[in-house]
Image 1 (cartoon, rainbow, N blue to C red):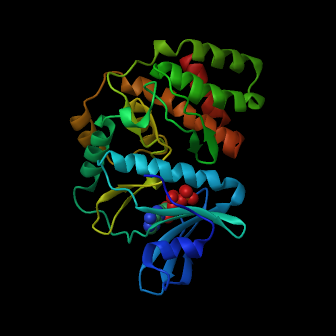
Image 2: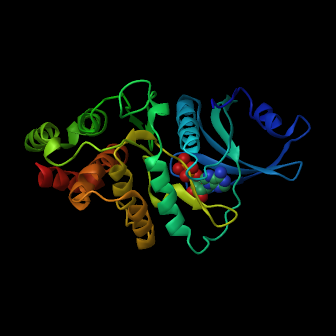
Image 3: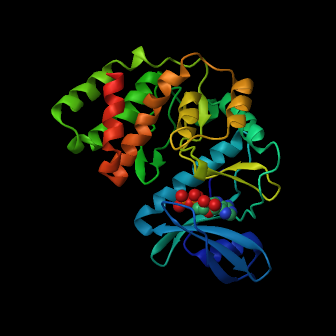
Length: 297
Ligand code: ADP
């Protein structure tokens, strides 16, 4: 489903609950990293969730809405209903269902793992007109651009659309030895990675800030950077900043099956996110990036 585009927030809200309904109050929601977020209290007693950015970043919300809709199409896990994207007086917005979060219910982690496995097993042909990996449109990883040019090889996709663009952006941080090692790593990725038996729709940015529990304490995914890839790239990301609960991994691998050697590939998949962090947030991430390049080259 294509999200409806509006030139006014008021009109976008009217489209959800009718013309008589007005925004009575806005309350800041903390916890995001790229956008400003608000709970909108409406005159009919309902609430909506609003994300806001500059006009020049309006494409973030086109990409986020498409990503949410792609995950919804797998019927594997709940995602928020998207009501509208648009621009208004000097800003761009994404308007969606407000989720009144409750504490996670017993079985939350297992369900998150099982649901993610269902998503990773679902048919990906609907997301690509040609090729096996990638997506029809580019999107964003945080505030960074993410290329999704479809390829028939996963290893080629990971090299050309993931690592290489990040290495090129980071070139100013690297000395000539690291540049040589990074290029050699790109040439030798097939020594470390394999072509999956089946491609998977990935969330693409699966850290602990991008899932939440809904009003029934059940898991939901938010804020994706979707593309079709190898399932291990999503699992690797869950481990980048501390890891999810062990019940998540038990349930996920029980449902999905595991390919031996994942632990040796994990940091290579996360090199993409680490280099993106280097490019977005600066040199605090440089030593981790360099260490990982050296380890694999
Ligand atoms: P950003 O794009 O800035 O990272 P997020 O999508 O992560 O923003 O949202 C910011 C915070 O708002 C999240 O940490 C989450 O707690 C909360 N949130 C996200 N989506 C919803 C929603 N639909 N309803 C209620 N709260 C939400």
